[in-house]
Amino acid sequence: MTRKARATIVSLLTLIVYLLINSLFHALKPTAFVWYEEDEDEPSWTASSRSWLDRKSCRWLGVCGVAHFQTADAQFGQHSSARLSESKDTEPEPWRSFWFCGSSNRSKWDAEEWARREIPDYVFDYAPLVHLYSGELFWPGDIAEHLYHTTPMLNYTPVQAQWDHPTLEDLDDLNQWEGGRHVFLTSDDDVQTQPPWLEGEKNIPESDEKTKESWPDWDGRVDGEIPDDTELDRAKWFDLRHRKGEDTDKVSAQAHRLLKQELHKRYGGKKIQDPLQDTRTEEAGGRSDAPAILLLMDKGNGVVDAFWFFFYGFNLGNTVVNMRFGNHVGDWEHCLVRFYDGQPKVLFFSAHAAGEAYRYEAVEKIGQRPVIYSAEGSHAMYATTGVHEYILPWGLLHDVTDRGPLWDPLLNTHAYTYDFDNDALRASTFSPASPTEWFHFRGHWGDKFYRLSDSRQYRFAGQYHYVNGPLGPRFKHLNRRQVCQGPDRAPCVIKDWIEEDKRTPRWDSVGVGE
Image: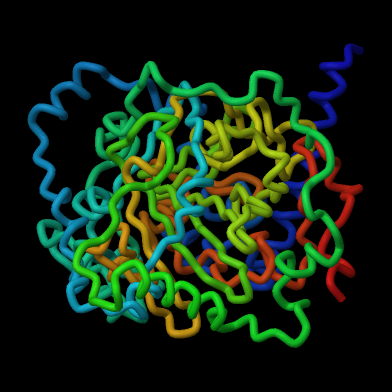
């Protein structure tokens, strides 16, 4: 028996065992094992099927919607260049103005208000760059355009007419419906027809002959010792809970005072009239029509977290045994750069509700700007090209990244500062007219997972073909004390080099700074 055949048999046996255990749990105690948000609707979801046999198979075998099963290759195809050209010529773009409808009273800002909204130069200097996947089907999206093509629904019931589109300026009004958490921005189109607005092909970063190359000899390891890499230094920024005797929940008074003094010195104590628009950094990649979102949080005592959020219209789930799972409309990904005293210390790359953290010195760069790789379909963020396995063993579930189009988010960014304690989002001096209301929407940026009766839906081994759309940036653990996205009580491993084994980290949150 060949090695490949043995691996196939082991993989299938693993799936069968998982299927049996999962099915037994769901059949005996369907409400006791709620592993996903979708599982909370299990009874009504199963009952939506018109087939008695399908309902019983779903409950006892965990195989739901057998008649709807289709291979991954049959669901989504390549783009039509003719259709793309036609959409560019004929489709109006009224959502463009949504981005500049925010209230900007900057002529009334004094130095203190300016300080609350200022984005330090170093945040732009170390802004990440993103290599998108070369064969991507669903490129970066514009949340303003996304609103234009969706209808708000409370679960499966519309709460606004299809023509009455919410905008970035009034999206939070949807919170009046059960607090917003069961409101879904539902696509007006059948997503499996791949409407152009969902594909986002027009948002592919523009190629530029001057695009810079990253390190030609980069090997994923730190070249020499990391500057100031001591236990004392790490204790200042690694885990904010461990900084004894410091008030970490408020903006650093000293930093705020110094910035205020600098602004008074620069402007003579007069009110600010015009924002500074330059990014003070050299362009490195292409511009996308899809804007990135920068969210800055000053966490006190020299620690500043810069969250870079990237939105995609559709998340194409990965495949297992040529069946696709985890599709959903709307997709938020992010990278966090943590600074201490103006120096980048660590980066976190989000991937499938988790992710990985690296020292700044370890990641690939173009100049001094870190490079991220966005995975095909799922848009999970990684530090290298190649195949990235997760959750299931033997590579049954994996992402793929490569050196596709290089996206420079700085060329189209809306920047904000955020005060977590007061839940106050402020348009920054960099983009003072950017609206803020969209941030406070508590609902889902996509469809509610389709009913079992829907021909697009099926479930196997507890995994749904289509799942709920995601919540927005406000719910991405912004007030995290460590850089990792998970609970602060869990260890947050930060790698000193790219291929460092997770099981043997040089140091993590345990014991640091205590």
